[in-house]
Image 1 (cartoon, helix red, strand yellow):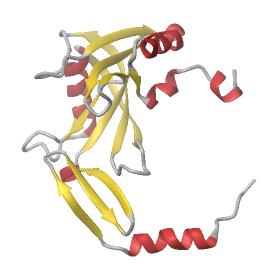
Image 2: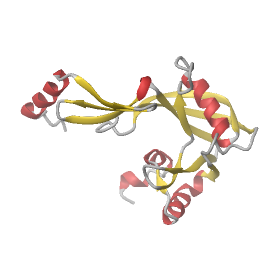
Image 3: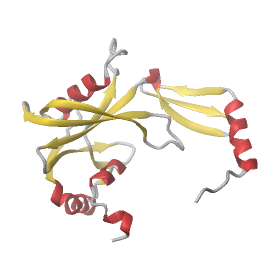
Length: 192
């Protein structure tokens, strides 16, 4: 069923787009902005991210766990990283960045990287987009764990056990990245 747009409300949002975008603060990686009454955050220098769905064979997925300062705790996530964040890397290809980040974070190299499209994380407050990349044909080539002080823990999880694994990490106090919903059985849609 199609629900018609509330014209007055839609008009207000279009007027917000006519307002100039103002940079309120800019750091090395993020920028806070306002446009009319809206406040939001973007990546500085048009940096984007690559998020990697790393499938090890037909029945396992590679996940990472790392401390996230904004949450104040560890978070269970798909491997991910910034595209073109290094000085001089402004033109870095999405798939090249995904391959690099996969090795750095997990120690796995993929024979095949497939661009699944661009998505937005939290479009009500963040303009950041990410490229979802499927990685297959994985081979362990290093220890992973990230660079510098990232201290990433790598988890190889059977897809049949993914729901139980996520719930056990949640019970430990881990945050759970919303993108992990795509790994859960479709029972969520049926309310089971």
